[in-house]
Image 1 (cartoon, rainbow, N blue to C red):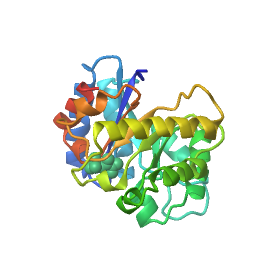
Image 2: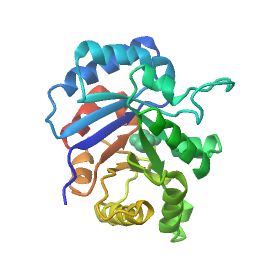
Image 3: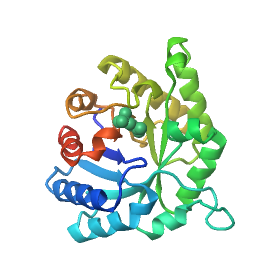
Image 4: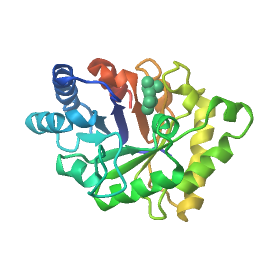
Length: 251
Ligand code: PEP
């Protein structure tokens, strides 16, 4: 089975002052226009740069080829939540996708599956595509508990009618330069498809499953040779327009 189009999402994390953001977003937007139809890009700048990047994408005219994503949202649509940003606010500045449950938020901000599920509901209500991140730690992998951890994250963080994107990001692969072998990744993707089928009670799963964790232009062709893969979520390499576009070219 070959999943198409492939989705290539760049997570810029807490990086990007004005000048660097304009340069990076402009270079990605211009490069995106010449990519084939079967690859779609999303870039997720920090909150402070969303409106600026939205304007750049509109000026370059990237349409659905390159869309805007955010890195988190609150569960409520508005109200007394100092320092928070709602899914409605994101939609209002042109955001189409939102990352939820990234391991850095699970670990550093104490986000639980139950909270992530409420954020998914908020994103869905605002018309955004939720990209739910799951993944096991190295200790869980070594103890043979990865499948149980992934099943529990899928059960707890997805809504019953989930129609977004799932990103498998083994925590040990994020920012480490280490990736699962092709065979190991393929096996995990099939496992995740089965878990999604039983969680969503569907035979034909349309939820794309992305891989994230130290994806570079050098490894991208091997990763994309797995037909069942729906795309990739890229951290560090998405901060360099050439690297990010080379990963997309390999899709
Ligand atoms: C991430 O944090 O989502 C990620 C995939 O990071 P990196 O590509 O830098 O490992």
